[in-house]
Image (cartoon, rainbow, N blue to C red):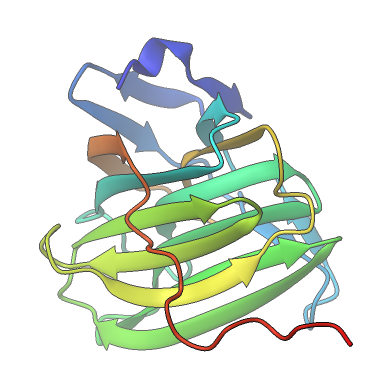
Length: 202
């Protein structure tokens, strides 16, 4: 992928971009969250993205976070449209025993968070974002081959031209090195539903 055409939303103080990988050193007190439960709004995490109008595609990336060590340190895949409409998937460090593999979908200024606990020894995760018009599928993989579904969601502002890519942040007083590699854009790997047919209006 031609990373020279990608654009930052809030460039981090320290980053390195080559043909093969992206390295980000997170800034302390950076995050993405809108309102729900915590009642605060955090919208200052760096996001590096490309733009497309392609309604059907899949984007995959490998993330490495051996340096994450503080609560909520995270890096992963993102689709940041504006401050109130975005999604992300990542592993968030919790403690020396476990961390949270999860995703956040924010529509019209309200975030949700779906998670599962994984062992703290896991320091690498692949993600795949697939688009079918304004519906999206987030998947994860520990080997880059066998992906499992994290969630399917609808983005109210997710039609037409969008931006998607990667992000890294440290919501508390922390900083760590995040490494992104094996970035690939392919035909949509999320196949059309072949089961129950849509309801027919009467």
